[in-house]
Length: 536
Figure 1: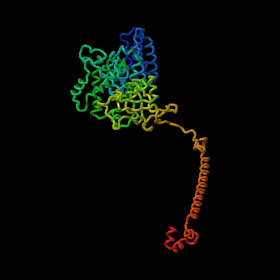
Figure 2: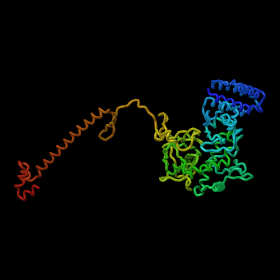
Figure 3: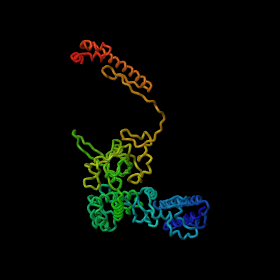
Figure 4: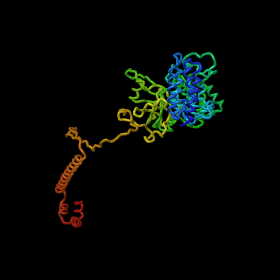
């Protein structure tokens, strides 16, 4: 029996009903008042916390069912979200990294509920009607409530967001037209910091705007950043990926982040963070390490497709050939990738498209022996003449989860596989798709060793092919050695006979007498000088 959990649930629920029932229909107000009375009378205070939760869920279902037709969908999603969060709290689960024990309100001081942040308050504050605009982004993004100091993951944000709504109603039209190619041309309103227009798509509106590379460089210098550590290309490169990321976040979560996430102040804050990590802290991102060849490209990495590049060229026969490549990014830098036939088919079927996340291992960096720096003037990952390419194949490429973190995969997840991922089944192996990174197989049967024998005719043409066992191969080998021995002895006898015949016909008389003698050495010593010369 945990009385503090009961006190937390009741105080949070009453606080929420007060904020919800104000200004609603008469029927909803009556039902919410009855539930508040039951809370105050102690009807929900029972030793079994699960019974508390069930009773609370039934009353909440009745309350949501009683919403009038004039009540908006946002109001219904408000109360359902609060129900889910409070259910998680009663079952002692964690929500956004905050456990129930961290948000307990003492039973003796129910009035302290407003001074502590409970899960129900977090849900209300994060909802788009109550969220603050100054959201800060680190790994994903943090709640604007400084007292919490907790991060919210993309999956938790998607749970809060609920069903996707119309993007055009909550997101600016200029935000909807941002992609990875025109992100560097975005300009912001100087007054409110919201996106204003994209250079080249329409005429510049009246009013002051900011966002040029020169203005950002001056701002960085004014913040006492060391100007010798960054260049103009560093600013434009990170401005591109920051703007594209923030715009994509707004389009994906329009209800929570619409017109609040992609702001000029947020872009500058992101640049400050990247300066501190990459330039000042020397913590280089994944793609830059691969391009510099500080780390092998075979390491498992999660990258995002930023562009599908199609290069057309005319062949000698007059036909047009189209070469398809991918531009992949880790959110900091990008590189160009060449694909095999199977991945090309997935691109044509739009199963791999802009925004897809790929988990790649055993890749190869081709085109440069010493590597290249992405900030070099000669390097451009979106041009056809890019010499440094990442070669990936289908057996070593898999789709990653939509909320997966870009960059290198931590070795603790795949150290037992040698830094690669596991192919689950043989049917997942793609022919001509490159080497298999790792696969778990069970040996069902071990077959004996077989030998292949080709039988040829006199013209050395193969007329028959036989498969022999190890015993048959040993027998054939013994027969072959016996035939070889007989043939060798035959040729040796013929050589001896021929030599003896030659001696009998051409040798001098002294030689014949010396050979016939019992002791050729003694006979040779008794010969004269001329006779010795004839014998020699």
